[in-house]
Image 1 (tube, rainbow, N blue to C red):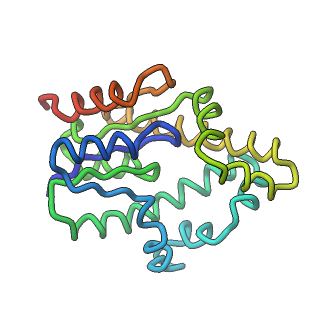
Image 2 (image 1 turned 45 degrees about the vertical axis):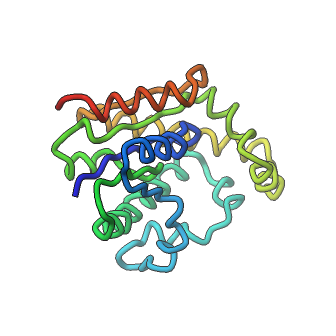
Length: 202
């Protein structure tokens, strides 16, 4: 079954772009975030130890940890989640457009022989810090639960910097496409450029 992969960092517009492209090209859309609760029910402490370890930890507790520890734990979480994502995709009618922050370039490079079928959107650190507070009141509400909201936000953003850098480096290492998002491009422009990558000749 053909799968087009749209991964990347937080605040890069993955979900919005994926919705536009899936509708435009008649692809089944799979957003990994939409399946978190189902994955949470399926997670096995033996098969998915990294996912199981983090799935019930409150965000305010996670953000108390050093950023490098958070990033390392989150990558283990994504590794385990990828197993469940792949199980889900086997049950969907193709072609599929799969999107999510936890789509790992190394795993996908091993699955897809065509680099044009995978793309990572990476938000710049400055843009991510501007965009996160605008995502809704839930951000401020979560931070208010922290002992030191300012320090927690700083660690959260540093963690996301590390994850974004890892994804971009891994994608390029495997010859996969990376598109930087800095807020100057419109959603339409980013969507168009993503569509060009997927439509390019191998």
